[in-house]
Image (tube, rainbow, N blue to C red; front, side, top):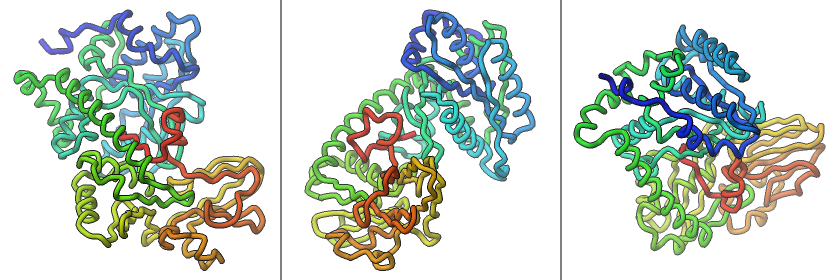
Length: 445
């Protein structure tokens, strides 16, 4: 007998407990693919909402990525189920070119981008996803095979943040992390609802599929999904303790210039344990370079070792230059051989420059943000940089317009009225209350 045949569906009492965090939101988006996991989420949320006296608005989002012939039919099936449940549904499509390689990863990235953008457009306060207990266990094994550190091995958070790589963010809720896939399948069957099966989930070409096939044998040795997910949860607690230590070190020894570069006093990190030191560097790279993900652990370790081994050295990783000089390290965005793309915005509206700076224009004016380049080409006195290295500002944002105004935060000019240009990062996200005082916080997605 299969595990899904023995599993019990999620009952009403259990669903109320799992979905209780949703009560604090006025508007939610649900990501539903049509598979058993998200179909069960849809059924549970619809029934839970019907039991509430003042439920949040629910917007169901399903993606037709066009990468499989069945995708359009699956999206229509989700829309039809939503219609029967009395929920609004939007089918998301993309005209992006079809990838020739790594189609599963491409579909995942496209789905994330479309869900984030649609959630923001609808004004949803959060996006609810159907990640579950087995996802936690498989992710731990995948990252263990890649040699990940404590942050890679930590549990998927029940609350997190997704963004589309261009600055649009949405809070993510995962209420089903304690529920097994078998229970979600049983929930669909108990309701008499069909669900789609993605054939790529059984394709041994993918590492996750191969690990999934090992799970029964691992369970016989005591490494079942519950045990693995609990281990990931303990590692998440350890990661939180490390972050608290890193927060204190950054508060004591890091200074961020309004134009982007960061300097770090070495005495502030001299006593940090190795794991905390690696986390600190990963967060500094993210804050300075704007990359959505930290570098692989081995590459990060190499950077730390190079900087520790020389009193005067410069190295580059994740689009960031790290220069050690005397008792400090200065980090700045590397313009790269191709340069940085300028941004033009016709207000009112918002735009993001190089995934690092948020531009907001309140009036109907056209402004442009370009990389600064050298100080001299814009007539900026070298003294404006103080004791910061002049190259550290090559990728700084220069605001041109309206009129002949030119402004670079902390270096030149004054911000034009009703125009805002500030570092874009997690402090600009939906988690403002937690992160507003910490420009170096990083969410591991």
